[in-house]
Length: 208
Image (cartoon, rainbow, N blue to C red; front, top):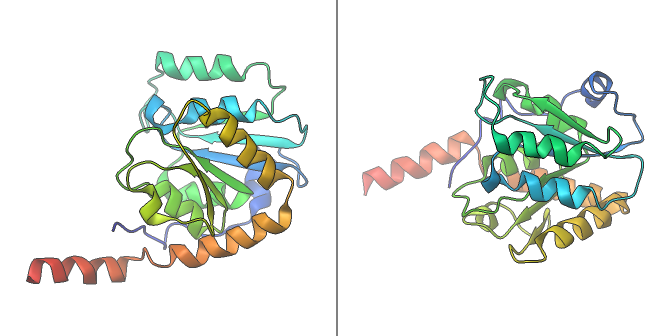
């Protein structure tokens, strides 16, 4: 299994990022991190979020179409249009360098990372877990190998995916105790994906 650089991903003062994007302390903040392309499920995340009628539920969309460039795809424009009627409850940050992502995860309450392709190794999920977030994700590729039901709600990629994501969002929004428990489990689970164990495991493979 892959690993993350935990030295660059970790807890920070959640207030800093919330202040930048005018997110209140009592807002329940969902976060999506990744390239803004169809296979990452960001459109499904936004559509599901739009079903939440809680005024203090916010969604932070971190990323852009192609890393640190100014390229804007037609799909990205579609996402902006889709979010236009949500009374500023959705915030697009644009590209954020990997070294700063820990700050953004730490500002959030729930990570929503619903890949709709066969994700080989969703490292944004491990990063979010390391920062103590409960996860909403999908049964896609290797994702179930990296997380489990103790720290994530996994939904099937079927015709009801948007409704199922929305139900998972409502469940975690309304249950702070569940969020806290899942967040603790996330952090514990993420310890499995450290550089030391990764190097040991891969060296054993080459030695065979």
